[in-house]
Length: 102
Image (tube, rainbow, N blue to C red; front, side, top):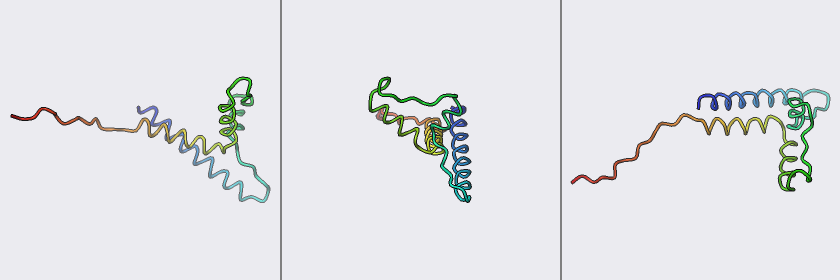
């Protein structure tokens, strides 16, 4: 639980850093294209992500291409928030007794 929550918040922090870096670079004089998720996957894995219709059904191919075209900070932030929410601290709730007193 603690590991998943920590990884989630680290991913949210990384997404905020990436988004702020893109905002600063967009304010510069030169034209800046944002960091797409496909660029980040290529940097991490060393190969370009392939979503061809021959390997995947058409709906998954279109979904994968859409996600890879999104900004990297958005995808990382959504995954981080999902992890942080899934592994959040919750108190154990006990149900009230259903036995009626006599």
